Image 1 (cartoon, helix red, strand yellow):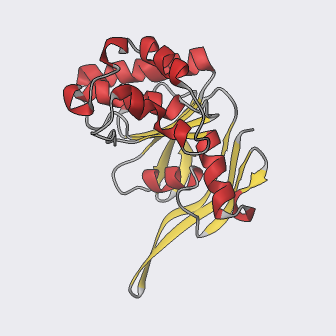
Image 2: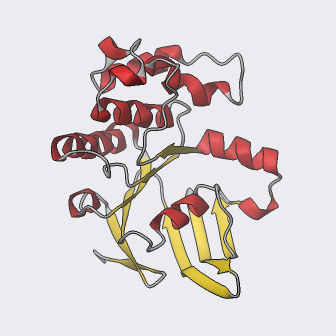
Length: 224
């Protein structure tokens, strides 16, 4: 089991009012599985994904990644674990405009190891999605679908065990959304990649080996 979350609760304080978004969520992610999580805006999907990705801390509950208790790690240890183990794909591509597609893909590999050279892997990934000819193009020269594919490749460069994707098709038209769905299926099949994808799109949710929905702060399995 790569990731295990137990009794995850998340509350936010707004003056004298406390808003509880997540209520005692249990979740496990084995190797090689696609999990999708549905829910409307404001249901807590992104909050849960940020907690699973160690970008945020729960108000209560425990999170373990590869049997490591996240709460026991110092900030630098946590950042190193996150960079090695987790790849992120967001609704907005967040590509750096002054860097080419190839350079954007390589950015995560430069954080922990300044002498690391994964250019060959980046080129292989670009070939995998048919973007080799665009490797030297800047984000302003790429379409929306191309930008998001580059963002997906960036999440894979360090060979993470887990990829977390937050509403990845939210800003795409139907054709590009369909292409991205097929890319996630291919990544799971060809790289044995574990993915957790939040979405409000039923077509995206349908690719999950397990499919969940957040209802009133609880995580409910849809295809049990």
